[in-house]
Length: 291
Image (cartoon, rainbow, N blue to C red):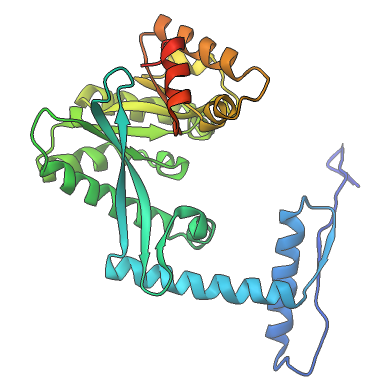
């Protein structure tokens, strides 16, 4: 296709549904076709999908789950669970990571994997996050001053707002928490999405005393350029590298951890290894110099 002196190569994703006696209106057919084309795009585009019973069940489940999420927000069913951050040398607890959990009235305690995708698609995730942030700060306010710090996971979509730093600092002040006792965890995708805005946000937080932690380092782009550009205090080594040590797999897991430790030392950053489950892993990390 030639358009404004440019040669374009358009493609198409197709969603198909078949008319049955169960359809009561044209809107039913359009809705199903829309779901099918959405699945085609998720599958990589340039393809077609036919609406079937499995897709129908998925849609019904997603609609039900979205309604339950909104009720859960109103009922305060989301809670932070605190995972300790431990000094390997002597076992002292130096901090806690605030992890999202849902106390579902029928299904019990749910981890994010059971509902996070629907929460993001429905737009509920921002409200859920702020509910967790508030509860974390409330919990922190009850702890002795000068104790362990707490980290909160701040997803990339929050960093799209220029008001993030101000809102976080207002929340901290409202609960009477010292800023030095709260840290924000960010992912590489958040840093790469809008580097200038993220840099301003992290600088504002750092000036107030709130430090930043880079989560899951080594699983994404792992660009060295932003490690010295952004005000990061700590790097978290992804659990996949620690898991490889536990299972005794051959490969570069130990070499990667050694490189991250050397780099963080040169940049004066802390390091946290995620997913340590055995004494063997602990001893191996201690031998490498991981704190």
